[in-house]
Image 1: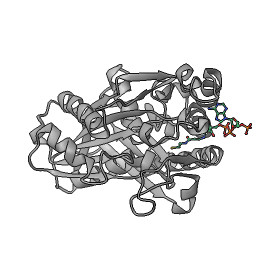
Image 2: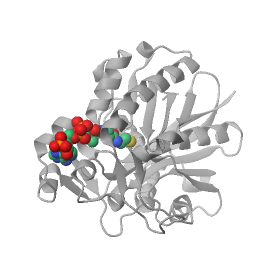
Image 3: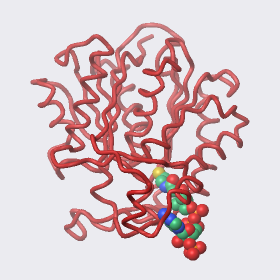
Image 4: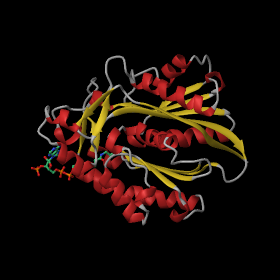
Length: 319
Ligand code: COA
């Protein structure tokens, strides 16, 4: 049976790191409030010349090196982002050009913070279906460009960055991506959205969120989709080595782990240093834990995310 497996991971962060104390000089907040309510201590913010596509390209180059592949072996690029460089062309095609790939399939996927799970599922199915032997699946965001820097309830929560994985076709059972499940419920769109857009205001807009409501839905949806995806893979939560969650808020991670009866030390946490990087957060956390030696070949992983839309999803992966 043809499957896809993660052959390499990579990530990239903007050079500039911004602490809570620096934000407290700008809006009415404190380091203590941000840490207590979110677990965030710092985030990286893109400077001039650092864009969704440049960060994605750097993460992709590292993932290609880890996989031992040349860029021209890639047949498919799926880039998850809600903050593309331009309205069109797709940022995936900019990444393709910067990687020096002359011809492959390349497009963007937009599912906000769940974007990487959507992109992974799409690419997995395309690799399984024979459309490509090697694919780059990327989450890359520059949310700093759509934040209202006067709104203390949102501007402290997000950061910029990119993560990428190379998916490669393999033959055999019980390896690579074992199951993915995706959901959306557009009735909840007004709880987390951007108040601009090409075909409405003609502007880019700023992020707006009812944080408490989002929090409430997140724990329920994430616990449900985790259970559903594990069942699809025929696994129990106790068999999982690592959960690599979307990094929105440490309290959401703790509450979800508690609801599932999951040991907290099995949850990869990077929200303290990256904040919420939307579609980039899962591959950034994955790459962090691969490179620091926690995640090893053969480990069973669950990746999960929830975001605007609402959208949510999970994947069970034999790394
Ligand atoms: N600094 C200090 N005070 C702040 C603040 C900040 N940065 N942001 C909000 N507050 C204040 C509010 O104004 C409010 O004050 P009030 O009671 O005087 O009106 C108080 O803190 C409580 O606000 P509330 O929004 O109810 O706090 P909360 O405990 O729900 O925490 C979030 C706020 C945003 C941290 C939390 O709701 C959250 O993380 N939600 C999920 C967000 C998320 O993950 N979104 C992305 C999903 S992809």
